Amino acid sequence: MLRVWTAIGAVLLLIISWTCIRSLEPHQENGLLPIDPPTPFYKLTPTNSQRGRVLVVHGLSASKDFMHLFAAALADGGFEVYAIDLPGHGDSSAGFTADRARSVIAQSLDRLGHMDVVVGHSLGAGLLLDLATERNLKRMVLLSPPPTPIGTIDLSHSLVVTGDWDIPAIRAFVSKLEGAERWLLPWTAHSSVVFNASQTRDIIRWMGGDTDAVRASSRIGWSVTLLVAAIILGVCLLPGRPESNSGPTLSTTDMCARLVLAATAGAIISRFFVVFEWLRLFATDYLLSGFFIIGMLVRPRMPSKTPRGVLISILAAGYVIVVVGLLAGSRFINFSLSDGRWLRFPIIALAGFPLFLFDQTKLKRSVMTGVLSRALIGASILTGALILNREAGFLVVIMHLVVLFWIALWFMTEVVRRHTGDPTAAAVFASLVQGWMFAAWFVTT
Image 1 (tube, rainbow, N blue to C red):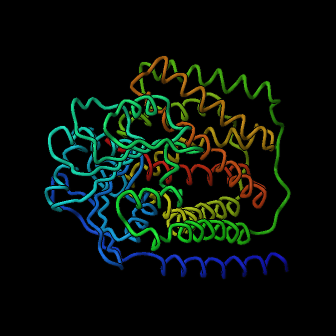
Image 2: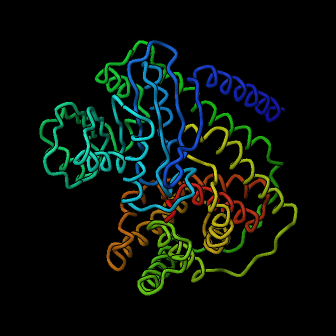
């Protein structure tokens, strides 16, 4: 009975959260800029007196959706906001190159007309700095700009923001940007400011916006509530818990040894042959290949499976993708698949299955094992990239986020396993969820 009432409460909270979020949203128009390549964008219109027009450019491995909470706060402050997807990101069907991304920003500015302020995060900030060497970008807000050769630029009307937990190279670069107003924010990492209501208000105040009208805190609070309610409802919808079909598991020492040896072999193989290079995923094709090779080297024998368990795992994965991801999580990051990403989804899912099967059949069901195994895999792949395959060095920037995703996925998979009693079904669930998320997030080239 408690389960039923919890589910009812989660549904009500889901509806309330969604209703409140919709009431807080500024008017949004979606479109495709007719430039080369065609570029997806959205426009947010302020409800109060207009303070200017703003172009928002996201960073590497992000999207215009990643900037939505920040852009919505700018609209609250009185700005007409345009946010674009760079090539290879979000809903863009074009492949990514730095030159093509730079060209898209320049063409967008030409197409949209005068912008009072341009805002860039990470790669977007670096591209704006580079573009400022050729054209007059009157006012810029640069969030964690990467080191960029810029020569002489007038930054007297620019704001540069970074955090004391940001990447050291970025902090060192920002300290050398003469003429700009520079903020070093405490307790702030590379992307924290985008989701920090107080810091966002400070930026809007600097831009001359109306901070009294900003509803960032409410918007973030209800978005988190929506996400939590979706997760609770998903757990409640799973069937009762059968007995778990657990076989013999490895000790922690054996687990570490197998994963490290397999990862070392995978790094050596990937030095000469990146298995999924043909998927054209910027740097992360190396990550996916390493994950696949490790899984194949430690791959256990396929245990017996139940059609019911596999069906439940597929439905659970669909719920995570549609409700937790597209409905709730899209407030924070892109979860949709654009043209060219649909084919990558089943391939990435299949590539992850061997390692997830090993995880479900041979590893102990403990939090320590889940966290340690993910950390070992991430560290091993990253070490291989830095030592043997420098072209994949970009993984340094995102590997901690990937490991956090793996840990979160481990907890979700544990819930599915306990409700199906089928390790194969749990591995299917983890493979499908990772396949969708990676297909949606990774940069295509």
